[in-house]
Every structure is written in structure tokens, then in C-alpha cells.
Image (cartoon, rainbow over all chains, first blue to last red; front, side, top):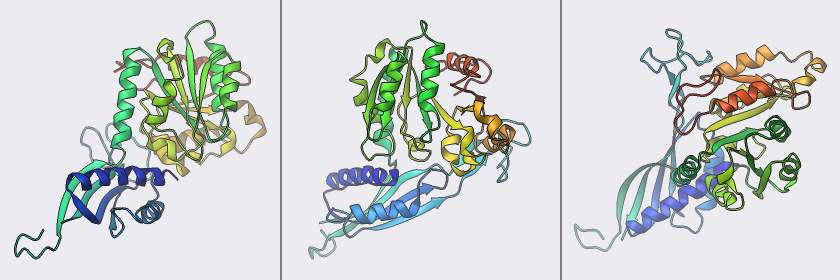
Length: 113
Length: 240
């Protein structure tokens, strides 16, 4: 249920940006969430729906871009096949998670008077 | 205002943020880490399911290090300070962080908890996280290493069900191995195989806090953790 505290942290940041820009409303919130980030996107959405009421985000739409997990060889032997041990098949080095760990606030559409 | 015609309508302004949502937590965690390194304190984030044996591992660690390294523990607990009381009885300086309904510790809770603990005098500070295999993995606390306690009774496929926490682990302590004779269906090799599917550098030490099996190996691993940027250290120790 940490999705709720993450959404709360996101709202704190949105408030800050909205104040800096003297926005009167937030129309769209775009986030990027990796499939290996440990977040449940449907819980994230429901937390957003609950928290946005009577805030500057009351009329905002939430756009979530999900990012697939991608493990690669750290020295360039390419991506690892899914469901295999996390070591490069060519050189045996431990793999690196190149994408899929994101919990990122990407963009806001602000209404400015 | 609409600049084109002066009609008074508001204007829609796109703003790129491109920032981790937990950036504030990350900054506090880094602040904690700098404090720890300034005072040469090695910090271990100990995670695992409720009942996986985290507190028993701390008790066994205190017994093994008694008279040697100075330990301290910050214990995250939903509602009680029972675990803190248990580790105090084992001779460890401990403080509880009662999280209420929060399912994890964050860097700010740890920072506030430090104010109640003489942590500067410790060689090792353990942060016993809330018993949970999902939420704690997402929050940096300022630790040097993540250790996950996984008990043999939890099922061989636990790493596959909760890959994130195992991916972030520097070490898995396979606990309660004294129970293995009563669990003929549990194969330790199978657990190791499953860990290799979710941990890029799988390191697992089987231990029993009851019989003391594996505790020496765990203590050697712990002593091999170098801060702040450890050079290559003993076999099985993490590299950053």
C-alpha cells in the first residue's frame, strides 16, 4: 500500500510546481512507472483519484506510461532473455537493470491565468 | 492570460518535470548516509516477511559479536515495541519506530529515530524494517547494504513472487534451517535457483538462530562490508 504514500509525495511536488508557476489548476499529470519498480498501477490510480479531490488536481487526468523491465549485459553483450538467470550468457557478468525501475513524474499541464 | 486576444481565458502550459517521485526521500536518505559515513557506522537495512526471523537474526548477531563490535538497532514496527524489547534483552541498544498504519520505513522516519539513539558510537546500525516483502524495497533509508531474511517455511518460490525486494538484496539469509528435516519438500538448491532469476549477484547464507549454524559465515560477510565505497572485499560481500 506504499502507492498511497508515493502519490502523496507526488502531490507535494505538484503543489510546489503549481505555486512556482502561479497555476490555477492542473489539467494533466503524466507519470512513468516501470514494471520492476514495485508499484501496482491500479492502486496508484485509485490513490490519485482519492487524493485529487478538492486539490489543485481536482480536474486533472492521470496518464501512466508503463515501462517494461529490460536487463542488459553491463559490457555490451545485449539484452538478456526473459526467465533466465540474471547473468550475461556471453561473459557471465551480473546483469544490469537498464529500464523498468522508474517511478517518475514526467510532465504537468498547468492552467495559468 | 490569453496573450493573443486578451480575452481573459486561462492558458494551458505544459511543464516538463522528469523527476523521481521519491526524490525528497532520496535526498533525506543521502543525508542520513553522509552522517553514517562521517561517523564510520555501517548500516544494514534488514527486511523480510513478518515471522521470517529478523529479530532472531539480530539476537544471534549480538551473541556472536558480544564483547566485540558495538551494535544498535532501529526497529520498525506497526503497533508495538516488542521487537525492540527483545533485542534490548540481547544486549543491543535499540529504539522502536512505530509506524502506525505505514507498511514501510522511509528516510525521514529513520532520521527522526536517530535522534533517540546514540548511533555515533555504533560500529553497526541495523534498521529492522517493517515485516513486508513489497513496500520496504522502494524506499532508500541511507543504508550501505540490504539484507533479506527468508525462512525455509515460506516456500521455495518466494523470490519469484516478490522479485523487487530480492533484486535489491545484497545478501539473503535463509533462516530457520534447523527446521529443514521437518520439511522434506523444501529444496535449498531450488531456492538458490529462484534467487538467481531475480538477483544479479545472488548471495545466500543458510543460518539458524537456534542452533547457530551459519552465523559465523554471516558475521564474516558483515565484517566484509566496507564503507563508504568499499574496495573489493571478502568472498560473498557486496560490491557497489
